[in-house]
Length: 167
Image 1 (cartoon, one colour):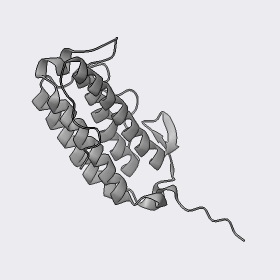
Image 2 (cartoon, rainbow, N blue to C red; image 1 turned 90 degrees about the vertical axis):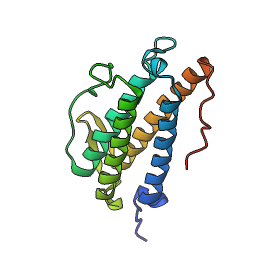
Image 3 (cartoon, rainbow, N blue to C red; image 1 turned 90 degrees about the horizontal axis):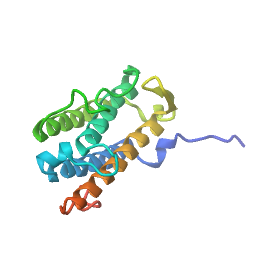
C-alpha cells in the first residue's frame, strides 16, 4: 500500500484560515482603538516596546509577508519600523496602515493555491519554513503582541476588548 501524504492545509480550507486570521486582525484593530492616543505611542512596561511599535511590527510582517508568500518577492533584512523609526505619528495614521495591510492580505491571499501551502520558503530571506508555517507564525506573532497590548490597557485601567470576540 502506498503511503500518500495529504497537504497540511487539508485540515482547514484556505478561506476558513483567512477568516480566522481576519478575526484576529479585527480584534487587534479594536485593541489599537482602545488606547488613548498618547499612551499608544508612549506607554510601556518593563522595557517592552510601545503598542504602536508592536502594531507596526505586525503590519511590517503581515503586509510584506503575505506578498512574499504569494509572489516569492521578499524584502530582505529587519522590518523597517521595528525600532519605531519612521512610523506613524497618530492613531489615525496607524489605523490607516492597519487597514491597508488588511486589504493587502485580501489581495494576495487568493494567489496562494492550497497545494502550495507545504512548499518551502525562506521568509524575508532569513526564516526557513513552509508557506503554512509562515502564515501561522504571522498569526502567532500578532496574538503575542496583542496580548502585550492587553497588559498595557489593563495597567492603564482600560478594559480591553473580549479576546474571544473575533467575528
